[in-house]
Amino acid sequence: MWTEAWLREMALWSEAAARRAALWSECASSAAFEEKGPAASTGDAYAALLASATLGRPAVAGYLLACVVARWLSAPGEFHPLDEPEHMRRRSFLKNGAVLLSAARLGRADLLGEPALRRLFSYQHKGGGFFDMDPAQGLGIVEAFTTAWGGRLALRFGRFDAAKRAAHLLAEVIYAQPDPDGRLYFCYETTPSGPVARWQVGEQHARYLAFDESVGETHQLGMTLALLAEMHLAEPAAGWDRPLNAGLRLVERWPVALVRRPALASVAEGLAIAGWALGRAGEAVRPLLREALSGVAEAVSPSGKLPPWDSGLGPEYGRAFSPLETAGWSALCLAGMSQALLNIKS
Image (cartoon, rainbow, N blue to C red; front, side, top):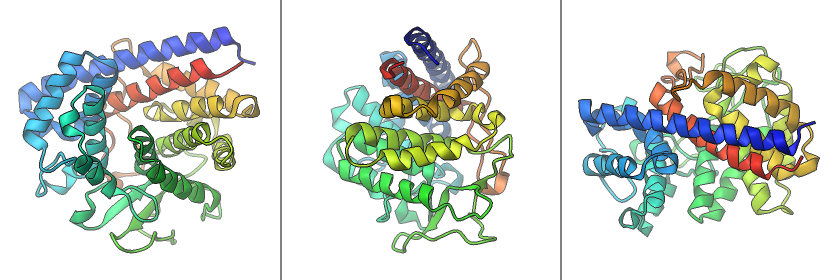
């Protein structure tokens, strides 16, 4: 049984760890910009920029944002050249969303007009998922992570219908796990106009996480839990607790070693927001959250740097998150976890 004193202590630790990670990523991205220029650095620095705008020094965050805008603003809400190499487009939606949310937090209203927000949400597939890549550039991948983050962005920008579509798709993903061995399937292959494609044996993008693995993209489910919990907080009577609890049952099947993976801290954040949203009905969250917090605490160094998050799934599925991305995302997740912990009732 946790106590209010323990929750407050962990909330304060999470906030301090988030600030250390944000400052480390802020300094590292500033150094990269000065050494290589924004053109060579923005692909990794998007999460560091948002972490800086959220928890860092406003003057430095403003400088980083100005660098990004000067070199990468190609259209309202679009922060990359349309002819950039594919490897730089891997996280186009995450990058553009992070830059616009940074602009909102830094008071750059000139970047936040309706055309910019309309462009950002054009990344959403008609089925509710959010593309990694610019849909205008052809085939994209809709993942749980980008879809859940897109839903959370939609809530923050007042696009509630977009958030609901994303959350409904993720609820469907949780309810309809297609693998007979119970492994978590989290990736759709789509076309800009076609329906969401279902998993097939041997399909190139049929990625999953086996429950006996010690590595894996656990952040996919962590971000999903966070969105479903936020939807439950926003609409307590709308039934979002059902897919949220179903997602928690998936995490319950993981071995302890998997729950304790740092995973960009998103699993710990998702569990903390779930505990807040479900209240005393979320008893299953408590032991899971304790283990997740232990894993994150062991990974955060005194400087704020975290080891790069490697999915362990091989290069054919894209690169791992770099140290800069890992620190930036971890800072954001730790900050969200801190807020949630303060709202959990013992």
